[in-house]
Image 1 (cartoon, rainbow, N blue to C red):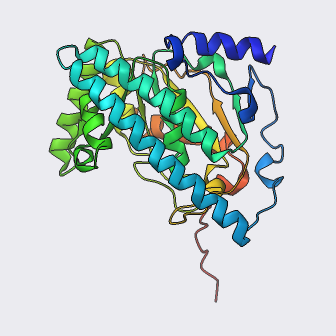
Image 2 (cartoon, helix red, strand yellow; image 1 turned 60 degrees about the vertical axis):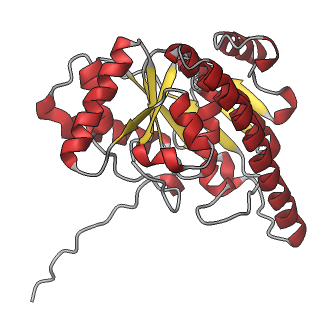
Length: 308
């Protein structure tokens, strides 16, 4: 059943010939459709034993260097493809998605972490996909697993990232100006118009930055504004274990098991501007419910004044 579901989902990506980006069987990927696993179940990220020995670190460095070189090669190849497709913006976006599927899958194969994917039936909905962010691995996973026809959103400064930034622009992905509130609001309106006009999906990280310890950060309001303007549903993607596999500021990739869980789409047709904070809190609470305890925000209790 799992193999059938996996094939169905990945066929819907419509990746042609040898650019097919379906999961690699020996990569340790398992697809689970309609999982009813209890929220309180102990996370599998506790089942592996950390190894900080010199051999483990050496293997990690080899994997990282291999990832970097491989990514540079695929980025260069697809940059050439994008240049040929300059007159066709949608084809450039589609090729950008194919680049992400191929490169993201390849990088995860090189890193070798076992991956479990749940809720794959929601992976091809036209929607605003949002994802918690605690590791560079999150980006690799989203490159691989978001459907064709999905546009990314990043700060405008990404254009200065060597090669990758130029490919991002060539692929017709969207950029926002975060230099001041007025510019940010205008950028969001332009993003909403673009995804509606071209019938695209969108992927973004609502925390706005990467968590240092894997714990969920507060959400920015941008994804709610985009949902209200585009009337697209929101599909939360919950990532667990990535902060253990590749910690912020570290160059040691560990073999921690990873889970990618798509949640059912959240309808936004009746969302209103006067309840933006409520909408943000509702989605944030959904993440808290589905994340394991070590990735939930710390609750800061207010001190109660002592009498006398």
